[in-house]
Length: 245
Image (cartoon, rainbow, N blue to C red):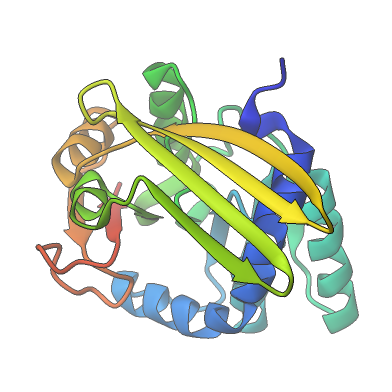
């Protein structure tokens, strides 16, 4: 049985439309990331789990040297086509985040939109964190953006549905393993046909993820409530972690 994060149909059907709907947010998000970590072009940036290249392309437009890494070939094909159309020199690499590592190569790494914690074995998450650490230059930072355990506990809904452009999306969620694991069932009803996907990922609190990153060697780890650097408190929209080597 195919694991959900290795299922191209899941990414194409469930995530592709979500990423394209967010294209217009990329300039503001990149501006905030740059301000949060204090980096200027032509620094080198790793966009790990880059998808269709929303942030990788925007970073390249601003003069950064960018490597975008993703395991979904269709997304990378789309990203390369857009880079070519704009005359942007972005390197896109098809690889698994548990394998990709370029020692001391990057001034910044980003891993955005809850692209961390996919693996049932927590040692795989550690391997990703170690790869990020090793790929950064001394003093460089990684920015991770995800839905923290604290965020989710405040807004959790076990069921919801949306009707968009004739597509009906139904979502079911279940927290398991003492609030360490989230199991989800996504159902798409379109043109009278039903398509179902099941996915799951690990939930981290700010303390838990900070501990993991420090164990992997990061010298400092700070948690924020959004990419603009808001406090990570009871009103935080996301969990944004900035870890420096």
